[in-house]
Image 1 (cartoon, helix red, strand yellow):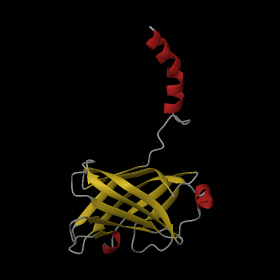
Image 2 (spheres, helix red, strand yellow; image 1 turned 180 degrees about the horizontal axis):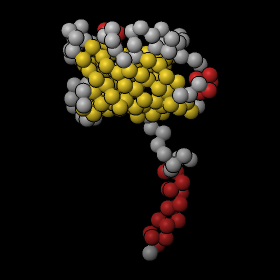
Image 3 (cartoon, one colour; image 1 turned 90 degrees about the vertical axis):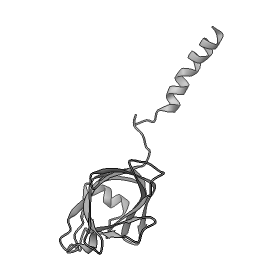
Image 4 (cartoon, rainbow, N blue to C red; image 1 turned 60 degrees about the horizontal axis):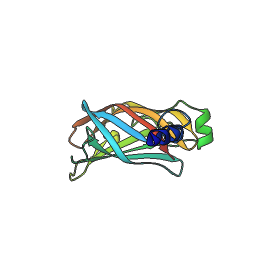
Length: 167
């Protein structure tokens, strides 16, 4: 009986400390569907390189970290500073070799392979990346694009999402 009373006394503290103020998770998340297969990305970074914003992750098919990973890098060209970006949200950049302003390009590199899939290799390439939210120093968004290797093989990337990536 004494243990039950002790547990009930601590329960409110546990509930307070186990929930954040928004009721959701602030965990970084990065997922995409590549050629109709689900991928989850880890070892995430979002960082500035001059005016450009680079988003990187290491991906695994169906989240299986025992599988051979791929590295996905997306570089958004000439992104406004965080405060200005927040006022321009949603901010859209296009995967097109012919677009200079608000352009984005991506590479997908399977590890242990010489292959590199690049959005710049397809002159008819399309797709877009939309930054849907800027909260403090983190960003969230969606993306879809096609990347091609030097032999012309394509990877279709759809339903891409990133949430809470820290800048």
